[in-house]
Length: 204
Ligand code: URA
Image (cartoon, rainbow, N blue to C red):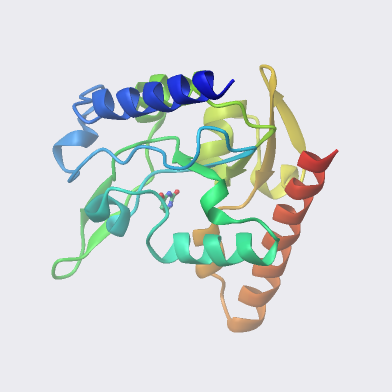
């Protein structure tokens, strides 16, 4: 058992290493580096986001920027240790366009880029054995479950993805974009509630 965990851990590391030189689509050209998933291979919970942001692109780790901070504090509040979760993204390179000054503005990955990145996501899931996957936002959920998924209406529901189960919820950056403080608090509360549901599903 321990041996198989060691093997799987090593295989994820090898996959991450190969992904460093990915040229499956053009996004590698403007990104600093490939941002692969991070966390224990034994994680019961896997979180899938959209793509690395500006900070993740610089640091080389998923969910270390503003949305990641919100995500980690929401996980904490839901009773989930962020270090016990495997976090990854549907797309492993930061897609951006120049903004004012040195700002790099996030761009949504298109269908072709999501497809080009799919082998890495599939590769990760061939090695992980989560009890539950939480899809954060439309890009991640549609990458796993297909384009009929609508986060607004499907949020809080679980769907089968092959033999795996995916719980649909919002992306933490949507909470950061709330129109005022009252709605930010309400959106954050609903997000924590979804994460608490994830805990309940895993405990079943
Ligand atoms: N948003 C994501 O979807 N993933 C990250 O890693 C960071 C921000």
